[in-house]
Image 1 (cartoon, chains in turn purple, blue):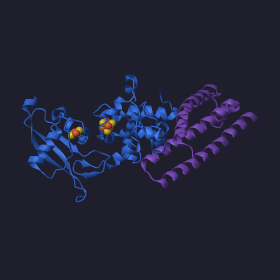
Image 2 (cartoon, protein in one colour; image 1 turned 120 degrees about the vertical axis):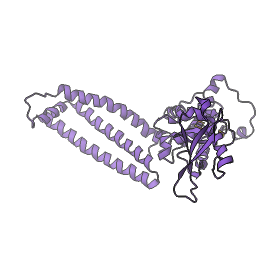
Image 3 (cartoon, chains in turn orange, green; image 1 turned 30 degrees about the horizontal axis):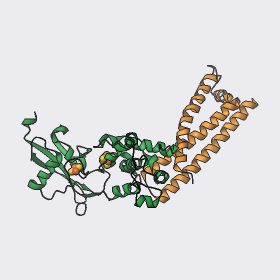
Image 4 (cartoon, chains in turn blue, red; image 1 turned 135 degrees about the vertical axis):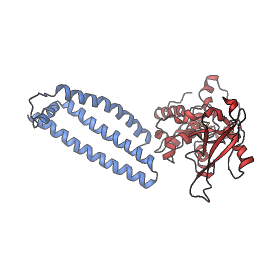
Length: 122
Length: 244
Ligand code: SF4
Ligand code: FES
């Protein structure tokens, strides 16, 4: 089992990481996406996807996804463990939240990879 | 202003959980005298108005920690709270929150003392023989003493538990007093139980569950500042940075 100390160390690191990667993400989307007044509703998403032509930005988005999933679901775990105590409850909370977080990361990664491919295929 | 005060009104929580399902409040009027504390008022009620009222106290001088209760919604020592400092016409007195009720204003401290005991509140020496039969004095410098002296002032009154939002919801959380006492021994240069101590609190319901609400330190009548001890302890668990 991973010690609570390690989990909390990761919790703090991901908290700071989210601030940094989140700022980079927002800044890149707002500053570099070729958003023009005449973009149609259908074109707009592709303009944003186009930002992820850059591998570094795609990787930073992936990092943001992993960090948000870990930090968010661990936060939820802490709240739930504090609300109610019991071995079965604790195991159920930990496992269910881990599975949901993993599914979210896998689905999100798939989206990021697709966006990267679409952007690079043109 | 104060000389005009003839009597004080106390609204006291009453319930015997063995017989009554619901609590009620009973109002008493107590003659005022200079320096009257909430505990004095309760003793007056018990001696003159209603002997069925249950209260717990001992030293009457903020030393034993047995008269903790909710006074006007805040955890306080009844012997250390003068009625005039509350500045309300009616004083509401209730049992300490987060403690199981025994009767009226008396709560059970069993779990509280168990948690304290779990923190190994004594000096540990690796040499078992030395632990039992010390061969010399263990001297400390002033600076070494200052690292933990503040945390030794704790009188185990439980006010910090009644104020702590985590203790209120997580019954496995050791609580401010216990964590502060663990730090008190951890920071003591005569102690060698470092790792062993940290293991006790590095778990799902341990040190990490503190949200740093700081309410424990706000209500502590002895200036112990358990919130500070918890943060120092957290740093110790994270980096194992025991100074020697
Ligand atoms: S830390 Fe303060 S409030 Fe808590 S038990 Fe000790 S003296 Fe009471
Ligand atoms: S009676 Fe001892 S602390 Fe109040």
